[in-house]
Image 1 (tube, one colour):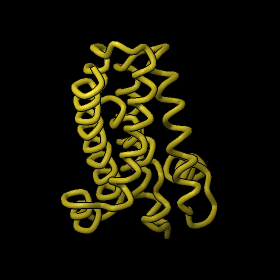
Image 2 (tube, rainbow, N blue to C red):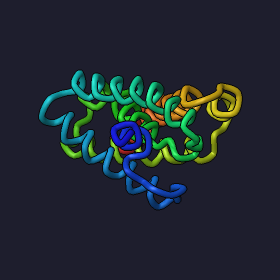
Image 3 (cartoon, rainbow, N blue to C red):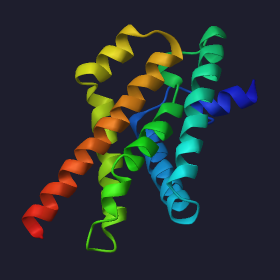
Image 4 (cartoon, rainbow, N blue to C red):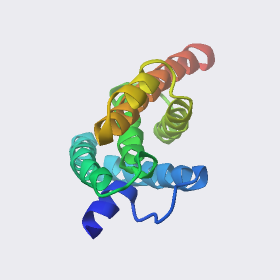
Length: 162
């Protein structure tokens, strides 16, 4: 039960506040940057895939034992990591050496924006798909949308700034 609670809620005891979610997104960003710069994008992808699958399986067990959908926080880490992985190949073409960290930070901020607004298909997935699958798929899609928006920001900044 403790492993399940840790994978799903990252150890939070009560209903998560936005501050907890923002801190978790920041920690996920720092962890993702560390993994990307030391082990590479493939390793971060496998870690994100593990947390996605474990979050769905353990999240459904958590919900069956009386937990609430709002307590499932493993999707935040998965969303941030997929937001970082989406523009990864485009970052190799940036002329500025610190462009990677700025792009990853932009991706994490945009992920939080898409997660909180739950616009379009992201909100539909969250509302219509039941259980932990709906929570994690909406966070995964929010991460992908944030990554695509980050690609747009990169493209515009290269075009405008040079």
